Structures are given as structure tokens and as C-alpha cells.
Image (cartoon, rainbow, N blue to C red; front, side, top):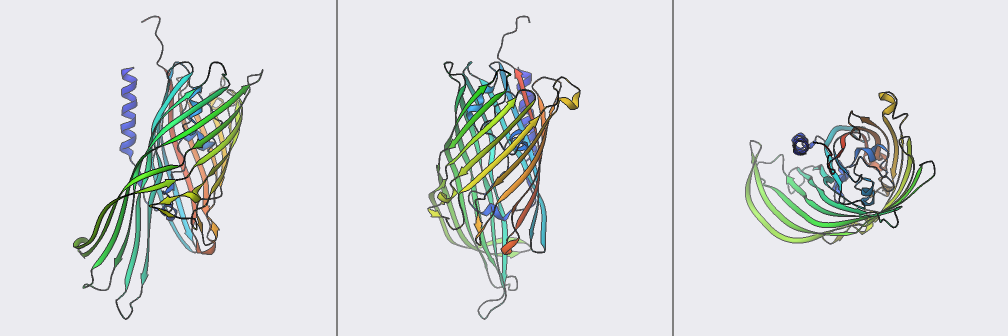
Length: 424
């Protein structure tokens, strides 16, 4: 067991050494708490993001904690993944390309008893990274000047969940995740005078540090038929969250020499407290599965983003309630056949009406995904690959369309840890 734990820790360290890379900023990460990472588990994502009615014994479906009871009573499950998101931004005739990426999830699950299972992990929730500028010609008061707006940061979460499958009603599972949300939201606006060496530049900075708990409830009801096929109905509800923040406000002037900024005057420094209010979200899903052969499922989701507030300010004119639909399918030709027949082939589709509305236009999003589950020699251990093409937004009304191509890879392992060997 010590060797296994050591290997897992080395894998985690290696994954963090890869780090997160970012060579392009999304203008849509300016709104709300930033840009949703896109997916948090390769298996879910390759099937269009379905999760409400998905139960498996070899990976951790953290989005519905009721699914943890599918973990074997003698198994420890470990799941880690990495993603890369290649983006093309287009507005009119202008195009920009880049890439974002990082660790998508580190998750684990294990049994406490025959009816109680536990899971935990750490994963990103959102990324904030935007930069925009506008230039103004010289007027009678000042020379030409430039305004630059920047933002960076994001929200992560560490979670610990528990699920219970009553012995007197073994078709039902209920679960709860306690989630610790943490991160920061930094934004600034900078005024510079490119044509004047005598004018001081100025910058206003705001930084909100986030640290709070939230809770995610899940329920699944599943019914097996005589031929072992199974139908599952899943429900999921995430409470609205009030996230206390520690705020830093800075307003200062500076000059630039040899591309180095030199602080000249501190106009205003303030440290205050505030709050970010996240909306409630809920979803329902249905799946039909023939074990070791195929699975088909779909989810419907709702998030009340019209209730979002940032430091007491509402954004009803920019943020709206979001409706989502996710459809997914998995097929395994023959688990006893040759290697290609043992693979899991996955397809998915997702669509959301969009959280953001600009110039009377919804910034909707849709994507088509493809994935493979590659078994390795040890039973219950897989390498999972994920590909998705999608788009968000539109070029109409002088807006920006974002085409993306996501690639994800994860390693999920299920090993028997909780049993005594008869022979040593």
C-alpha cells in the first residue's frame, strides 16, 4: 500500500509541475466569476457532460455525490486529469488564436462501510483572464491617451463528499458534497499617455480574495431489470452561496522608464470586506445502461445567474438565467474480445442558452464531443481521452465568436485496498 500511495503522490506532483498555461484571454471571462473551465472529468465531458444519472465503480462522478455508492466496498478509486483548450477568437475580419490548459481534476473515493462511501478532491471552477484596450486621439486638454482593462484569477474548490445507500431501500442513493471555494478576482484599469513624457500614468486596482464553503446535494434512484439492464434517475441541487471577500483597492500614479514602472504617488489605498453571491443550480438526468455494453443518458440543468451579485452590485442587464441540455452515449463492443473491442467509445452533445447577454444577444454555447476509454492490463484501470469542438457567441452586432477545440486525458484506477489477504 505504501508503494501505491507513493506512486499516487508522485503523479500529483508531476501534474502540478505541468502547471496551467495561458496564451490567450477570453473576453467573456470578465463576467460573473470568470470563464467556466469547461469540464472537470474526462469521462463526463466525453459524453456531453452528463452526470446526474451516471454511476460507475471506476471513476468519481463528483457532480452528483449520490453516485459514490457505486464504488465497490473493497476498492479505492483515484482519478486525475489534464486538459488543453485551443481557442480561436473572431470579430469581423480580425482573428486571434491561443491556448489555455491545466489540471482538470484530482479525485478519489473509498468505502466507509457497505452502505456509506466517501469521496474528495480538488479542481478548478473558473478562470479569469481578459485584457482589452481603447485609444483616444489628442484633444485640446490632453494629448492622445489609452485605457487598458485587465483581469486575472479564478476560483478553485476542494471537496469532501459522502453518500448513503440504505439497506432497507437499496435502489436509492443520497449524497452530499461539502465544497470549500477559494481564489481571487483581480482587475485593473490603466490610463497612459503614449505621446507625452510629462504626463503621469495612473492605475486603479481591485482584488477580491474568496474563501467560503458551499454544499451540493444529490439523489439517484436506479432500477434493474431481469436482464441486468438498469435505468437511473438523478437529481442534483447546489445551494446559492454567499462568498465573503477580503478586498484591496489601490489607486496610484506611476511613470515608465525602460519598460519599468516607477511608483510616483499613492492616491488611495483601502482594505475592506465584501461579498459575492453565487446562484443556485439544479439538474435532472436519466440514463439507460446495459452493463459492459452501452449507456445512453441526458441531463437538463438550470442556473439562476440573474441573482448573481458582486460587492452588492447586480448585473441583471448582463447576466441571465442559464438553461443547459447534455446528451451522451457510450458503447463497448466486446469486453472479452481483442483490444479494440474492449475500448469504450463515447459521444456527446451539449448546449446552453448562455449566462451573458450583450447588445440584446445571448452568448449561447454548443459543443460535440468524442472520447475513448483505454483499458490497461490491470482490471478497473483506464486511460480516458476526450475531444470536443464547440463554439460560443457570435460575430453579429460586432460581438466576438469563440471557437474552441478541447483535448483532455485522465487516468482512473480502481484497486482493492480494503481486504485482508488469506495468504501472505
